[in-house]
Length: 328
Image (cartoon, rainbow, N blue to C red; front, side, top):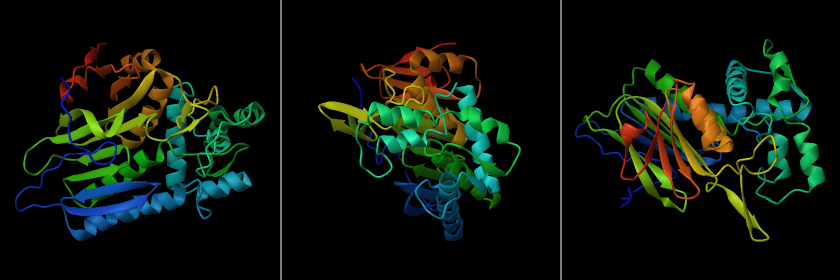
C-alpha cells in the first residue's frame, strides 16, 4: 500500500514549528510560481532572502523587458552581470555533461510551442525546424571568457534559474549567520541546516496522476536541494493528445522518455535544477548511466507505468511507497 503525505504546491516540506523558535515566513510570487520562505532568524533575514530572489528574477526573466536576458535575446548582445555570467557558465556545464538534454538555448522552441504567453499549440513542422536551427548550447562555449556576450540564438534559464536563486538565497542567509531555513520555489525545495527541534525535514514527491497528493516522502536532516521536473506540471491538450512543457532540444517536441517525473537531490540548487530537467529528457537508461559515473547527485524516478526507482543514496531517505533501488 502506498501511504500519502499531505503536500502543498508540488514538492514541499512538512514542517512542524518548534517551541520558542518559530520561523519567520514569507509567501511570494516570483519566477512565475508561488514560493514559500521560512527562516529561523529575524524579520530582516527573511526579507533579505525575498529581496535576493526578486533581484534575480528581475535579472534573469526571459519576459521582463528590463532584464539582461530579455535585452540579450532582443539585441543579440549584452553586458552580463556577475550573476548572469555565473549562471550561464553553470548552465553550459550541465548541457555539456548531459549531451544537450538540458540546453539554455531552447527558448526558440519554447516560443514555437507558445509556452511563453499561455498560447500553447502544436507548431507547424516549418516553425519547428526554424526554431531548432537556433538551438544548440555548443554555440555559446567559445564566448565564455567574456562578459560582453553575443549570440545568434536566444537564452532561457527557466530550467535552472529557480535552483540558482534558491542557492543564492541560502548562501546569503548563511552569510547573515542564519543556521536553519526552508525554501520552496515551486517544484524546488532547498533546506539550510537541520530543524531546531531535531526532527527530520519531510519532503513529499507529488503523484503525477494526482499532483495535490504525494506518492512518496523523503526524510532527511541537514542542508539539501531537491528539485522535481515532471510532465504533469504544465501541459495542454490538442486533438486528444497531451503535450507537456519539457522539450527535448534534439527533437523539438516534448520529451517522450517514459518518465512521469524526476526528483534530483544535490547540495547545489542550480545543479539539482538543471539535472532534473536533463534526466527527465534522457530517460531512465541514460539518466542512471550518468548517475553511475557521478558522485554529486542522487535521484528518484517515477515512470509512466507507475514504477518508482531510487538511486542508492536516495533510497534510505525514501518512505511511504514501494520502490526499486538503482544500484551502481
